Image (tube, rainbow, N blue to C red):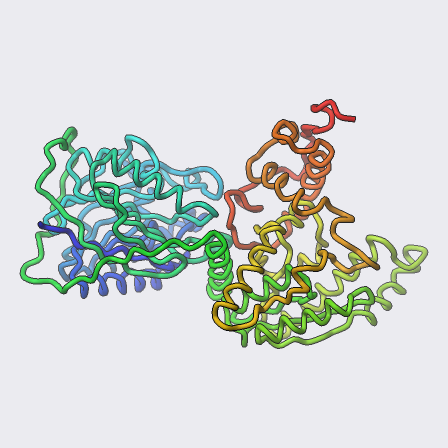
Amino acid sequence: MPHLRLAAAQLDTVVGDLSGNVERVLGALAAAERAGADICVTPELAITGYPPEDLLLKPGFVADNVAALEKVAAATTGQCAVVVGFVGAAPGGGGLANAAAVCAAGRVQGVYRKRFLPNYGVFDEQRWFLPGEEPPPLFGIGGAWVGVSICEDVWFDDGPVAHAGRAGADVVVNINASPYNRGRRAERLAMLRGRVAEAGCAIAYVNQVGGQDELVFDGDSLVMAADGTLVASGAQFGTDLVVVDLPVGPHRPHVVTELLPRIVVSEPRPGERPALDPAPLRPALSDHAEVYAALVLGTRDYLAKNGFSEAVIGLSGGIDSSLVAAVAVDALGADRVHGLSMPSRYSSEGSRHDAGVLAERLGIDLKVVPIEEAHVAFASMLAPVLGREPFGLTDENLQSRLRGVLLMGVSNAKGWIVLTTGNKSEMATGYSTLYGDSAGGFAVIKDVPKTLVYELCRYRNTQAVLEGLPGPIPDSVLDKPPSAELRPDQRDDQSLPPYEELDPVLQGYVERDRTAADLVAEGFDPALVDRVVRLVDGAEYKRRQMPPGVRITTKAFGKDRRMPITNRYRSSALEESGGG
């Protein structure tokens, strides 16, 4: 049976690196050509990287992106066509379009412009782009009819993908820059099965991979046959080139219910082509493995793409800094991760010991810098201003800020980026110190709730044991009650609800946008809800000053959730539930 050989290229592009992105595309094209592919498909906006954001307001950047596309087109001198995302002109030339060019025989053969522009969550495409209006053409490539679509287009019923299928497409390629969040793979598979059934043809869903600021793109490109069978998948959280043969023709009798423009790009390859191994169909990672891989990739790419080669972490002997250290080592290598232990008069001997054991098992260097001398000096300096030496919250925050000063001092002197250790539960409730534990360049677990922090630590230990190594995170860290150790016998549950009670309320209020009354109606305790809502709303000003961090949920703090700092709206759980 005739077939189309398709190469799905998962690329880790860099926003703004036009020349570098051209080289990445051309490298994939060359590999696809060697594999005898008819078509090489690259991700959405592969030329500019995604998302280019307000770089698109610079006319020079847009012009340079077009010139970069021309370099790709000029390099298509072999038998393989390439689909590449770029920023093009909107219909009529009155703005910009998120576009895909089909290049072959040394030139751009045709262009498709994205029809559906996402404008929710982290997406702001309507800020920069106008939607495509013209009918999507079918491209004749290697004896097959190929439809082209871009990301959001595939999520809509009776949209461009269905139109292309009904018009006779053998396969529709869908180029993506789809960020990761927990559960995303299942959503994509369910959507693709529905779209294949509607279109009656194969779909190649080709996704970007890599970290870009807080976003992580997980790759995991998916090729689904016309009967709904998943026939190939790309690596999760890694670059990849997936080559697969897809059957084409003869023309299906139920198609051609609508006619679309047709552009013949290339004829079938003459002669024999290289033998092809079975397309990879990789088992999906577990939930914890996915999240951990996202944290590692997001951290690695943020540092590499922003010119940092090494990192420093304040190691307290607690659960959060232990997870951040493990992620950093897996992202960068132990020789490029440095620990700083900064005990105070309240730091327990057990926590000091745990920090040392963690550093030893991870293979990172650990320097101990006690803060007692500075603590005493600052307290005596403040005493004349306050009328007495600092106490209570003032004294607790003073210790945290002293540690922040030390970490930033090391960062300045060594050029190492400070990785902060705050988790989502703490950031949500304001259980952090401005210019203290929040000071740093990247917040690795910013979107990881506290209960998941424990789960990921146990996952990382289990992986180590499977490799014949001791779990890097001591059991004592996992077993002891969480504490900031900023006053005698302090525990987190003296300031916050227990995390197993807190995190479900936070998930509902922050990620599902429920009001306090909604949460009470769902069965949560009114007093608990009221307390949590007030903590979250009162900490908005703090979150605005936090560093970026890896996004793993559907609503992370940052671009996903844009709440006003000055905000008097309250949906009181106690009042609306009739509680006292």
